[in-house]
Amino acid sequence: MTTLGICDGYDGYLRRLGFTEPPRPTADALFALQRAHLERVPYENVDIQLGRPPGIDPALSVRRFADGRGGYCFHLNGAFALLLESLGYDVTRHRAGVLGPADRDRHDVSGDHLALTVRVDGEEYFVDAGLGDGPHEPLPLRVGTYRQGAFTYGLAPLEGDEPGWRYLNDAGPCPVVNFLAAPAATADFEAEHARLSTSEDSGFVRTFAMLRRDAHGIDTLRGRVLSRIDPEKGTTERILETPGEFWSVVGGLFERALDDLTQEDRQALWDRVGRAHAAWLAARADRSGTGAEAGAGAGA
Image (tube, rainbow, N blue to C red; front, side, top):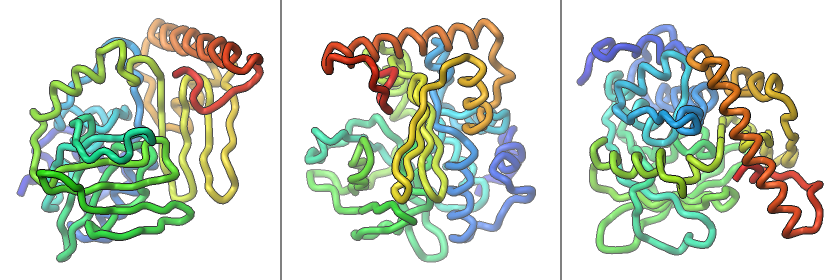
């Protein structure tokens, strides 16, 4: 078992999650840690958009989170796994793949996602702080359908040559995550991280995005369009019209520290988001005959 404090940033990471002392490794604490992670550490690609993607060494991500940054799945679940192990949890990393609606019937695993399972108090859980719109709390690693507030999720066996699982979220834009049962290591994701964070055909390079999850819904910022998804109240959205409004949301609602960004960085990202937004509006106008619509896909 790793001792808390070996990795610089553990204490700050826990404080960011709202813990003044390391919790004992219980199921209740695991649930509280995942809830806090989704609410306080955003899924975001600020540095990828600025052309300086951070590496996925989990110790680096721990320090970044302690300093107020966020990341995407390899950063979020990588650091969370390291933190959980430092607290005494039995954690396994898994090679996973995220599928959109058109591909939901596939049972292969692309490796574009890192998933976690955690064993504690005699139970095994699917744990994921790296989907952005995933479950607010861990799911028991058993076949079934699980309700969390107004959201419904499922787990089913993965068909194919290698054993694994399928996480199901029919209400989400990516309704399936396939993951292998076999353990994986950080090195298994390095090549895919390089592609996702630098290739011009990667959605993380094309589109600025931030997500955070709470008990009632999901906040999403794609380009300049801020959305709130709440199954009970419906989806609301608005366009952020000014740089001040944009950065207020990034640093406020999404709690992403801004002290690492120079004025030039902020202007460069705002300009990039604006160009993508204008291109999206033009494409929508070509398809629909009007440029008046705005939607959650803005900036894509």
